[in-house]
Each structure stands twice: as C-alpha cells, then as structure tokens.
Length: 279
Image 1: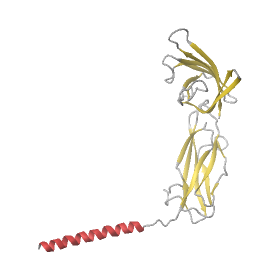
Image 2: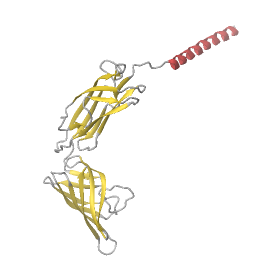
Image 3: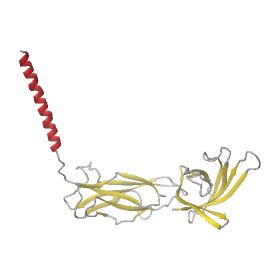
Image 4: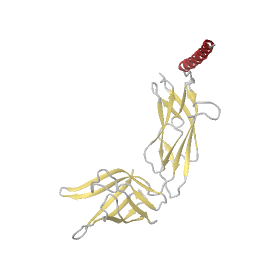
C-alpha cells in the first residue's frame, strides 16, 4: 500500500515537472514577431520660454535598423502660437530616420516673449503615417497607442528670468581683463524677487561653489540688491547694491558692494560692476 502511494506521489511530481518544463520551453521559444513600430521616445517635455537652446524631440524605430531611410509624418497642434512662442529649426511635418540608424529629432526653438504673466501653453505632435509601410505607428491599437503623441509644455517666464552670461572687467597691472561665466540662471516665482545662481565672476575662489544673490525688480527698470549674507562667505561679510534692466536688449547691470568685516581695524569694501547678457 505504501508502495502504491509512493508511485502515485512520484507520478504527480513527474507531471508537475513536465508541466513546468513545458512552460519554460514555451517562454524561451516565444519571439516577438512584430510588427515593429516608430514612436516618440518620450511622452512630454517642459521648458520655460526663456530657454535659449534648441529643443530636440526624439523619435525612434523600435526594431532592427533598416538599410533604407524611415520617413515619419506628423501633425502639429496645441495652444502655443507658432512664430510667436516657438519656431521650427527642422523641417515641419516630416522627420527622417537615416538608413542604418534608429532615431532622429524634430528641432524647435522657443521665443522669449516674457511679460510677467505666468501661464503655460502646449505644442502637440501626432504621428500620422510612416514609410516603409511595414512599420507601425506607435505600439498597440485603438485609442491607447503608446508613443504616437508627444506634448511640449512651454511655461511662461518672468521678464528677467532665463540663462545669462555674466561679465566683469578688472583693472590689472597689464591692463583691463575680462572675466566671464556662462549659463548663469536667474529665476523667480513672483516676477519681483529674483535669485541669481552665481555672482562670483573672477572675484574669489569658492572651490566650484556657486554663491547665489537675490535682487528685487522695482518695476521701473531699476533693481535693488538688499544687504545679504552668503553661506560661502564669512558669517559677518555682506553684499548689497543696485542695478538696472535694459528692456531693449534685456541686459542686466549690477553695481555691487562687497564688505569684508575685519576683526581689527577698518572693514574692507570692494565695489564692482557686473553685466549679465541673455544667452
């Protein structure tokens, strides 16, 4: 009787083992047979209107590289106004993935028309067709096709917001010298109080630390730099000043006063002028 039970148990184990092996073999043999498809690599991107670099919107072929070029046609919609808020740096309506390649870019450039009204607008891209026809548009079918559509969100920026190049001229024994720092960011959440990401233009070494500076837009093209401390400076050192914004070329000029407190004797005061030009 025990022998019969053992035989029955062995039979169950054998059946289960064969079943698992069959499933594993089936999974191993399962190969994606297509159709291959093209799609937008991302669903969306968000940029402030003051962003000055080209924006690349990538499409790619989700399949083997082909020996021929892939032509992707798309439509453009959304609430943003072409020619007012953005323009195409690449051909509008069509993007081509070169032969023996997997991806290509639609290229846009934003137009900075900041007016201190903080809203958002969109540019919507929809792939409509692709050649060769052996490829499919997006993954899936019906209303839930993945990768068929892409949305660029353009966020309004404040008048003084954006990326700048900072410049300062120094008088040395060999004559005037200019120090320059690029990619200085100026940001604001209320279009009145601004934060400048790096005022250290050839002045002092902070071991790659970028000290910030806050200033106030007075609403009449003049600026105020209130007395403030920086964590990177000494606990008693201060910086303050005034400034101006040129509405024609958007250049910001800051006249700063840097006071270094001395433990003995008179404090040391440095005065200098910096210019920030939009990139």
